Length: 171
Image 1: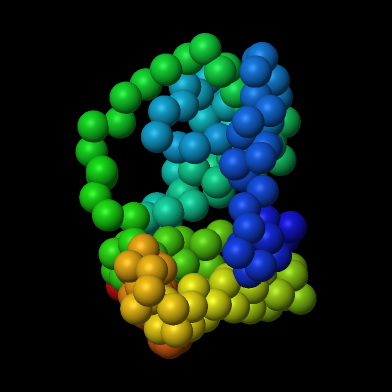
Image 2 (image 1 turned 90 degrees about the horizontal axis):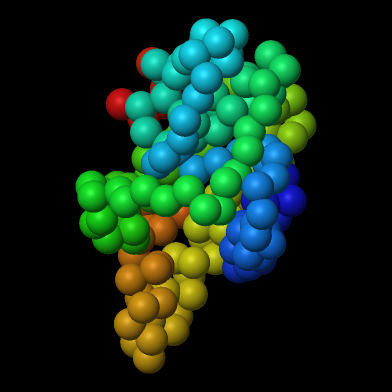
């Protein structure tokens, strides 16, 4: 919830937290691009939930692993190179799927009041970026691209707020 509030304010706590990782340490979540998971921990958590089409599938897995008593460790010396998906991070469709994945995670793991607040903060962060792009993009091209990227999430929350629900969600 703290991360969503910081995003709505145009800040990120993730970068600050990442900079503190200088030695092996237990963490709550990892990026899913490169992880090694013990088979017993994978089985105990039930593997990936197939309802997640894109985005937050690893966050969901890690939350279930934690509930099953598993541990996540960040090993700063470990390295991997991710050759795919080097596209533009600000493509509207990509941000739309990211919002839908986040909404699916919130629907599954958060109580109704927290879910409503989390979805509201996600939408507010996108509205803020879309509006800033519209208002100031003439002078700052990167801000214009940021605003355009968040256009669908900001202006059409009905597309993503139900996550990947088979009836109401993003397909």
